[in-house]
Image 1 (cartoon, protein in one colour):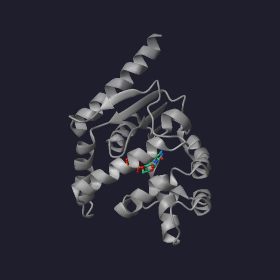
Image 2 (cartoon, helix red, strand yellow):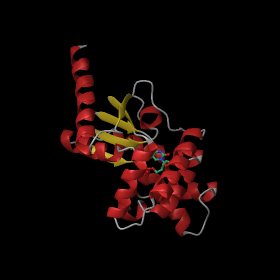
Image 3 (cartoon, rainbow, N blue to C red):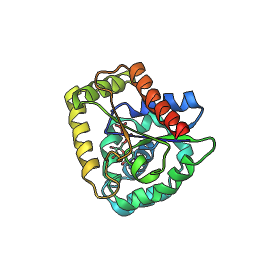
Image 4 (cartoon, rainbow, N blue to C red):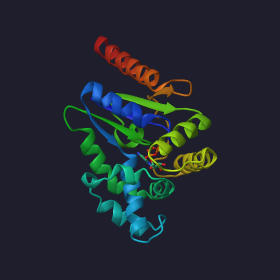
Length: 212
Ligand code: CDP
């Protein structure tokens, strides 16, 4: 079973993906970490994130087993991750790893921007998770503060909107809802309610498939 979860920045897709993977006993890949790791490698080496040659070399050399999730989620990496993610050769270099991960038995949940459209277009269930920018900014600011990063809500909101625009407007695998993806709006939902809504969508799709 492959479950694809896409959506804009800080929409709650990561939290939902983790919970679903745990309930169904599936592997989970937060694909944003791949782009964040490329951005960190480029910045650490003193290059600019829009340097396509350096970013591509970093993507080719990436070792996803070495990820330090806490460092990759830091504010300093976030903006640069959406800059490297717009470089087609960077995306190309990361496709095989993601597709191999998706087909690992017994199945996987992948969350990102292009899982249902490019990485796993044949996924069994696709969710597109959204929430209003203000709610997303509030949640992300809380999350950053919990991790000890300082977070100004207006600054976080500006970052989300800037990244959403860059992610949606790029030519290579832009952020978009696959035609067969189920929209899940988490604006007014608690973490638990969002999780239950996701499970309901998945179970409905599975029972419809069994019947059909
Ligand atoms: O957690 P948040 O939603 O803020 O971001 P993320 O999922 O960690 O992704 C960071 C950046 O990586 C995004 O702004 C996208 O530019 C890029 N990304 C992408 O292009 N494709 C993916 N499948 C996942 C992330």
